[in-house]
Image (tube, rainbow over all chains, first blue to last red; front, top):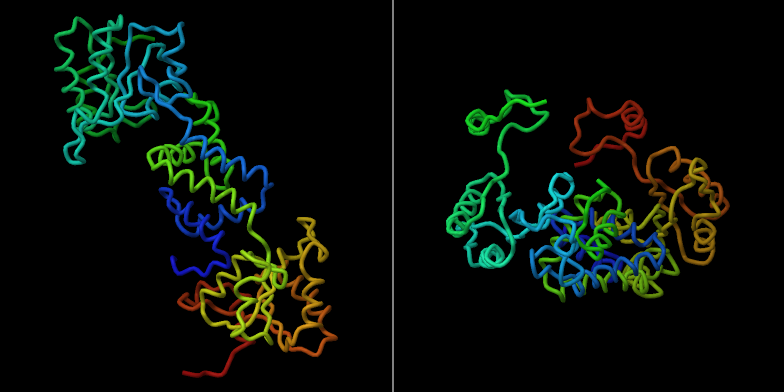
Length: 204
Length: 204
């Protein structure tokens, strides 16, 4: 589809920019650009300026490395949150997912990835050193490891666990088990096996 | 999904801009924005500026009303094209589709829509008056009506046909029949019926 005959270089440029985005092909990109052409000039200008602002003004929180508008993110700056509990996550989306549950009132630490030798990502590429520093200097009592239940996630969990094992804090991981609402017969064996081993007392 | 807790207003703005696009929800928008955050600053700035340029600098050809970078589009300005044949299409995408076939060397006329009383679109909302003027003033010998084979397309075809019937030109429509590569049994009855009525002499 790259052999399209665009009637305009400006149109083609805009289509190519959209087509660079993941999951957006040439046809979808054209549809989006033609949609923008039908919008008000001020709306499209605002869209363009938002993208420029995004890259120029966004910052990363100096404490937790989450995306932020200022030096300290809204969560780290919130004095009502529990600064004794620290939840370690892989990326920004995970912070948003956990925030959406409204079940956690502690602070976060965003690693910026997980240890993955296949992708050439080692501990030094991640915010692990700064995590260890935070545990040393902040009044943290518990570190919750909330990484994906994959091989890479487990490796990273273990690496962090080793690094923090001298510290006098509780290290926990999020519970793994059958998903709520899922049929038991579709749960994989490892998950089901673990959910039996790690069974909890029944409560209403 | 609108209750997301975004860690940054700038991030949220960018996500909301993408989520305004047709077919892009809040989750996809976030994925696209996080992708852009991983790109080079200059690339994202270029994307933003392209959008601003798009809306500010794009023009419509004064002859055929196709999207253009200048007063006259590349097709209307191309002296090697057959200026005796005019193909009437609904929109810019249709011009691109026909150009991609590489089977047509004449000029185009973009109506900017089709007559659709249901959507409140009448003949005066479309570039029909300018089409009639072109037929009067240009050396056009044939007008090909290449509108969608729908009720609205047929209505528009008929309206244009009536308007041009006094002119001494050939008025044709694109052939309708079974699609090439399609199984005959899946063709709808009307299409199949017409394709028998409008059969053409066999040629190799």
